[in-house]
Length: 408
Picture 1 (tube, rainbow, N blue to C red):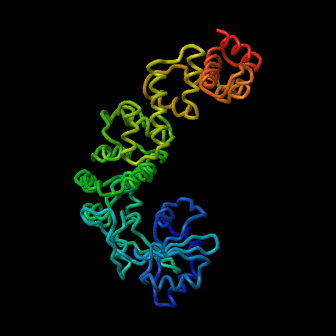
Picture 2 (tube, rainbow, N blue to C red):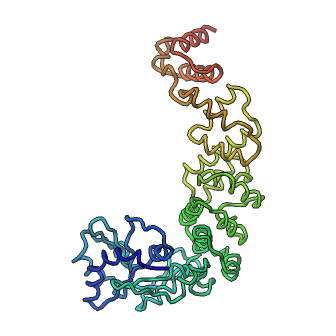
Picture 3 (spheres, helix red, strand yellow):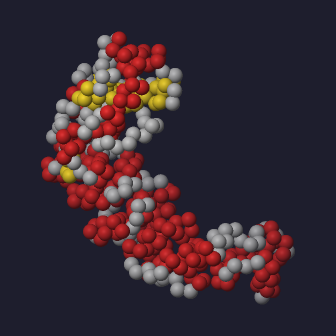
């Protein structure tokens, strides 16, 4: 494993590093960029420079004021000063340790003088490496590079201490396991199972965001399996009556994160119960509605499969923008036969199916001599019903049908 990929990054940060050196301070590149460089992964050109230093925040601010185009100090009390130089965003944090008090959702921060102390409080050894700038010397006191080579996930300190400092790290363990195809050491697994209750001090929004990151991975199965094995899944997804079946659905539902969420929650209950579970875990309203709508359409496709053209049209319209997700979920809930091909053929043959009605409200009011009110809504609904039953309509066919309907 090599750090050659970081040469352009080190060169870009050279001037800033030299400014710190003039003040007698040392500065280090940290974060996922070091890990990814050692894995040989491509580096996104829009990366942020995540640095740590032995300089205290006032000194960091003074150095950045002379160098950066823009400065922000909202995180100063936590030791972080942010800046922008050209198109590059930079965050510099004073070496620190932090921990969560037993019943607190906010960390207690203590500044440290040594980089090793700072790295000891990182989540995992693969993230507890630093590169000194500008020379590029690797600082790896916990053998993170060896763990990367062995595809092994460990914590710098005892896992109980690391997870106590920030319980969200237990969910990150699942994400890193899946993202980098790592094996998880048994003491770490045991600590996750023993400390599952500790996750209660973490803000629901942070839990939601971490779960979203896991579900967005190409292959999240091993990470979710770890959550089920340790009892953490119930705390982030709610009770799953049949977790082995949920995992099978997840593997086969495809790579859409929302469809994956629906597949995992398929045994939870009614759409309303699914929305309640997601709401309790601070999922956005849009996500809750989408997941419950996908599940409703998927279950209908299995329990009451659309067999006639009108039924198929109604099912496709009800699935709406979530058609592909509903098809994917339906396929893991039961037998759906040729539904995917039938739906695709219908959408191609009737592209106006989910579009606006062939006559709008103004045209209907003029045709039927109606004033705005419930009768107009009834006419719109009747035209929609007729369209779904009979197929595409021309404007003249729509007018003829509405006049007959009105007369009757």
